[in-house]
Length: 137
Image 1 (spheres, rainbow, N blue to C red):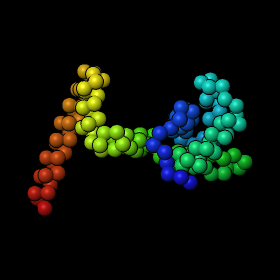
Image 2: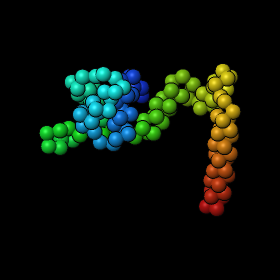
Image 3: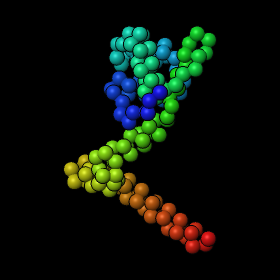
Image 4: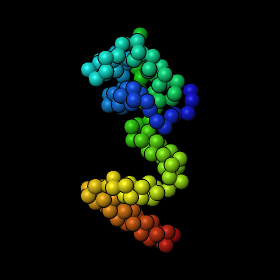
């Protein structure tokens, strides 16, 4: 098994969203869910599940005659890992550079700015709380 990739192909993303949504899936489950979105053959889904397993995205257990697949990482953990890799690769490892990029290019709406302000205030409060805790030690 290889290291988990930070990015997914379009098809891997569609399939992984089904796996994340359902938790445990068979190829038949995935095929049934994806058919209305993309007209893929059952064998294509079977092949892709094998590819995703070799890439370390999913793992399987045999249950009767079926393989039951589950994600190796939650959607949130995968997203966090991918975001960190993007920040490290393209923004010199600094989240500030990423946020400044979006701010400079007009990609932050009013709601985004309000949410960032809340996150910053919460982070400040946590820092004060940690400082208070370390002074007591």
